[in-house]
Length: 126
Image 1: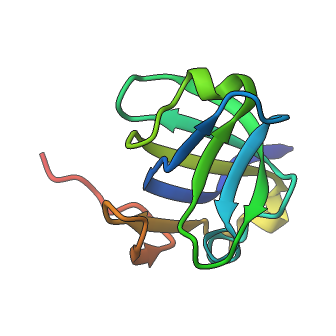
Image 2 (image 1 turned 180 degrees about the vertical axis):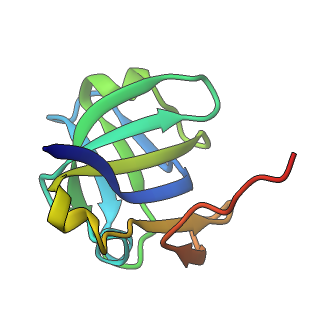
């Protein structure tokens, strides 16, 4: 049996650009991609915290250190500069691979600076 698991998450990244006339994809600062382990042209899912939109595209590299998160092409209708988004990639693993698997979770402040990283989501206390 195989299971689809969260592989990487960029949590509460701030959209810096929305380019409707671009060919497509989401341009992400290369340093941020590397930290999360997301590869260029990898499929990503984007969840817009501000308007509830959820959509699928692929990642491309933006200039390292630029802090760019640019939603491009048709997806530019679903996010605007200043919107907060969660960007996720997923991986399909077999049971053996699941034994030691941990995702990479990267958290951001309002200016797309990394505040901290984890490999698990803390339990919520009710």
